[in-house]
Length: 223
Image 1 (cartoon, one colour):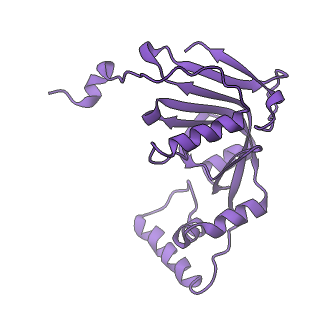
Image 2: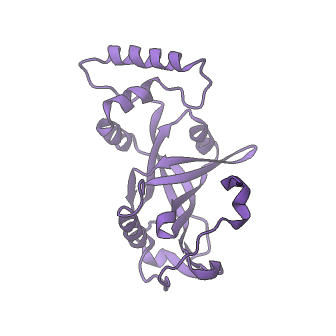
């Protein structure tokens, strides 16, 4: 019997969702609605693929959304990590929410900006203590000799901060994705999907508040 990877040409799922008609709302309202619906069907609805750029091209990884408002999407990372360095050199960013269980995805393009220190402080304070220690110790994206070395450094930090709050390290904090394009994709029969994209009404690639309806125009795209 062949393995699943050998059956890729025959591997597909038929979609049968309700037709997604013209969205008559600002993009923030629709994104909040779709996220709330995904929370009832998807294991990690806030898991999103974040793509950045370096001199060799795109680089993608999954991170967790930790904030959403009219200014955009907020996530946190090590500023010295690969994505942290890439975003500081080139703020262009793409985000994708792959909500396959709902036959949906949301595709976003924008510009990343470093979050205000108070936003990073507020989120770091509510992280589990173990995650706080891990963020303090980890030199994200850098080579390490062994798992044992990592654990030794973690244990040393845990002992250092025993009985006290773990301060947010300077190298760790948030990025806010300021959006200039957001697409809502709904799977349909025969791969004839519904796609509605919000683009800047003035034709620019400048970011705009997601609740400012007049800043956006909505266009249906061929699947």
